[in-house]
Image (cartoon, rainbow, N blue to C red):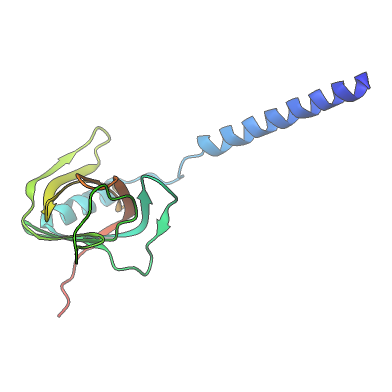
Length: 174
């Protein structure tokens, strides 16, 4: 009986060490791909053109699991000083939206406080504010050198939500 307890303790200790080693190995592995200067320069040219689009593949509501957006229309378009936003929303609304209100985020026009900058890691950060009826929306978009994009939306009437996707040149459809 004593040998069984000791054997169980040793087995549990070994399993714990294997689990810790596996987790350490997983988290220590980088993406294996460094962003080179050319990629970063291409992104900067795209942003400076003010003619680009962000299309998201994933939505991450504050509460709940990630939602795959592939195949669902969604975009944030920058055309000169205007922004067009069409994003689905998944989450909790704090106050009623009224009849015939949009379920997602929809905006077209010149946003308030549109700013382009850099963060500590030299990623491009875009911030702006919009109104959708009586709701105030704050957008913070981070663009990475590999053309990945993360968009965070904070609302006065709903839970925050974030989106992940990519940025590319926007070509107007005729």
